[in-house]
Length: 180
Ligand code: FES
Image (spheres, rainbow, N blue to C red):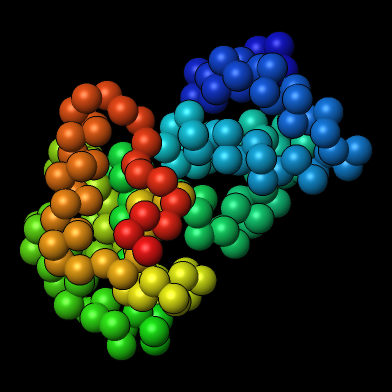
């Protein structure tokens, strides 16, 4: 860990966190997910350089690391907006109006699912995997926070709040399960 390539500065910048993670696991490769999350926090997504560096730290090949990363929906392999809005399109949410909500979000943001707004603020995603918030259907996630019983009006308010938070330099979206 003495000399890090410019593409993975997070390893040097967050050395104490990297060391703490590494010390927590007797089996080195068990640290792969926490290290990948650290890399993603730093860059916003995982670049090939991150796979290589994490592999070096854990004595794994980049393709082994990449193979593990590809299993996890919350690990991203391309640049994303500051806020990733993931709208559930599983049965309970669809029955509660998720499709209309999707149309509304697409219209408000001017993007399709999988796209990011030109200002880099929002990425819209849809998932057919249940978000495990069926009691709050239709549900969505903003990064790691859950929002339930969403309506077009609530979505509008949420987007305004997120934009205001970004303008004021606040880093995070609202708390878990807001709106439930
Ligand atoms: S179906 Fe959407 S949260 Fe379960």
